[in-house]
Length: 336
Image (cartoon, rainbow, N blue to C red; front, side, top):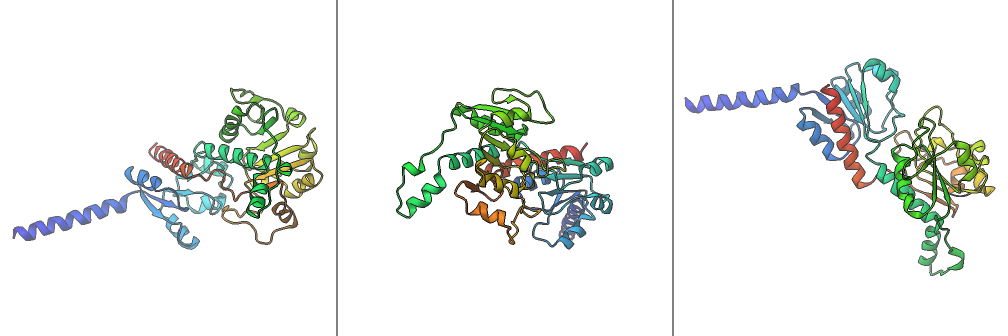
């Protein structure tokens, strides 16, 4: 009899624990991130449903019973999305940019949207620095030549950062991170930010956009992608510079008109370019259009252009930091 009672009690406990688990608020993880995100959300009492290996049809079915989701850039969350899933109360974006989320609609509906722009700022600053040094010191060219037994020294003389004037457009977490890395190179650092006109600090001096155009030798974009910043760097932008410049973009591909950049490269208005992002990327950033236009082919075959596949903010450390920050901010928003 005692055995039967103990067995029944154990069975009831298992069913009770299963029932409690089933009642836990559900968060759909649309893209794969660091495991710290799942463990942090689980400890806070949320059920995490892994969706990155599921079809979009299955993902959308799961979203019907979720109260929140974590996404990078797999698909857009527009007004139709919010109308279809009124149960969603919080969205976490593991990254900095929020262009794939209709923030205005979310705010109107009371949906909390959180991200982690400071989580990958170190990675972006270091990557921009690495690309610039690679370009100025002709490391890409010299490395390829030495591997073929070609030993050219005079032809591969580098250009120093010291004494140059660097312009940073957009002085948020990313822009400031790049300025901090540049600060040890004995150069002048100017920064322009349309939405923050007085941010002079130990790294950069706040200036107007015209001062960037008039003084800079090197220019780096660190702006979000919005309707206002789409093709921010176009023909008018490049021709406005008084000097020939080196150009860096680790922001978003569509902030730059690639055809106009190529024209500037051909005319030597832009001496060289470092591009971690391209306007030909998919919305998910996981691939580039295979039907590459002529402008891309020019970039790909230019020795004075450094290209990387949208990895500036993609370090091992930033993966952890962004995942943890987003998890913590989602927990705070959902428990508010």
